[in-house]
Image 1 (spheres, each protein chain N blue to C red):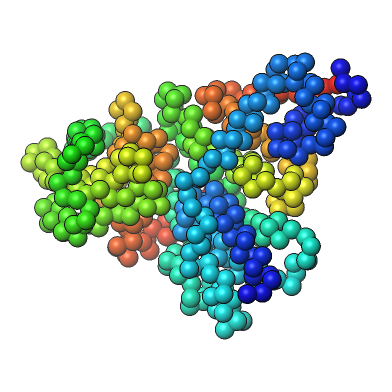
Image 2: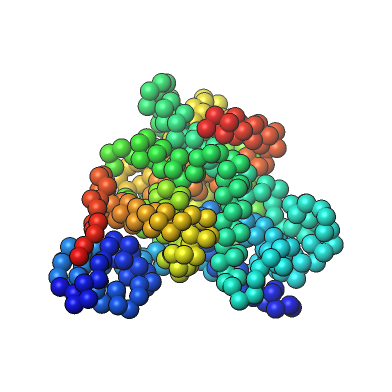
Length: 293
Length: 170
């Protein structure tokens, strides 16, 4: 085969794919690929992977540096308080929870939703009829309204304050519209819905730049008592739903369940941050869960 | 602005991108980058001119990330989640759902994902990756290999891991 009899190993194929192979070996790999279609196929597959990975996050702009990462400012702050612990600097613009705490919160939710939630769902108590009705309404409402071109919402996001105040009043539960910028979804608006037995529900609709929509349904009913997180899938639609002190939430959309859960986690956190008492409890739980890992 | 800060600034977008690819949340990613930049400014005397600043920063950011992860749990985060997801979440869903590259990448075990990201998105040499994650070259290569095969299996919707491609060929 190769005139120099260079020995090619799998590592060399990786190096070839990553453009890290020495010139003489490149020739040898290419000769081998011509000879062995299986290897050629494998190399092409990995090259394809690389191309796709390279495109990950390409719609996010990392070059526009936020104020938080302004080096002159960081330096000034550091000079001012050379001996203080870094975390405590004034100019930091981070929110109250550092990144690793909110990571812990996500982990906590994953554990809860992964084990307790699904466990409860599958094995112990059956879901109440009200809960089933709730998520079914969420899915139907999503199907009906998310495809609307002209009037997807009753009140548009440019009247957000009015929208939230109005819906809060109608469903008898004060809430804020979660911010889903992190996930590239922005609020389109919302509408009031009739749930089963005449209860009102609030639907908020979010849209991403590609026009994909997810809806958040919020409704209050004193019979809602299921504690855990659940997923329901109907055709291509996934609905991630949970209850929190008599208020039920469902995030619904034609997106994969993992992504939906990430957004739901964020929504859960944003809504819970409005209630300081529960947040403390929540953090304690995280410690408990983590200690058990 | 000093030479160091100038050079440092050039690296911020790459650090942000890597942090985001680890955390998937911009705010948290930028907090991590901020920790890294502050440390870099404080420790700038330790950086040797002429060596790669980018690799030095990535090593620092990687350590900050790992330290926090260790504090939280002795398990890598993604592994925990992957198990939940594959075992409990959707046992009989169609394969179509798992062909999205982003989704599949998130399912890779943390250590494999890091190596793959550092090599592909960040374009580090295998040797540099070894320095960043503080592992010998052999470990880098085996993680890279496992990452690619797992990813391939996930993308193809395979349940079983792919067979070894090539052990040693003449």
